[in-house]
Amino acid sequence: MNTPVPREPANAQKQRTGLARIQHAWGYSMAGLRAGWGETSFREEALAALVLIPAAFWVGQSWVEVAVLVAVVVLVLVVELLNTGIETAIDRIGPEWHDLSKRAKDMGSAAVLLSLLLCAGVWAAALWALLAPA
Image (cartoon, rainbow, N blue to C red; front, side):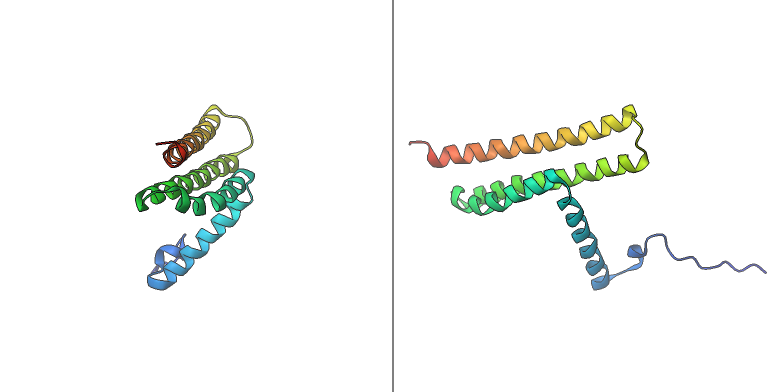
């Protein structure tokens, strides 16, 4: 009689629950941030965030404005990490040039550009509201 041999799940995280799952997820997230820090563009944007996030409390004239100013800065970091993930996955597939690989990387880059433009626009409007003569 053949009895099935129990196999370990492909992703042990799926079997974890409660605090163990949260602890491991935290570790994966920190590993992702460390990997992102290895990318020049993420590092530059993170350093800018260290200036912009505290500045949001000075520039914002209400808690909503502060929240929006902080959110657009964090959005840039999120989109940059996603773009890096896309680029890494494409590079994992192979180094040869392929139109679909180029397209995926270009779209990730465009997403970063749009998040940067949104961030700059929101900050410019907030600074204008703060500094423009009444």
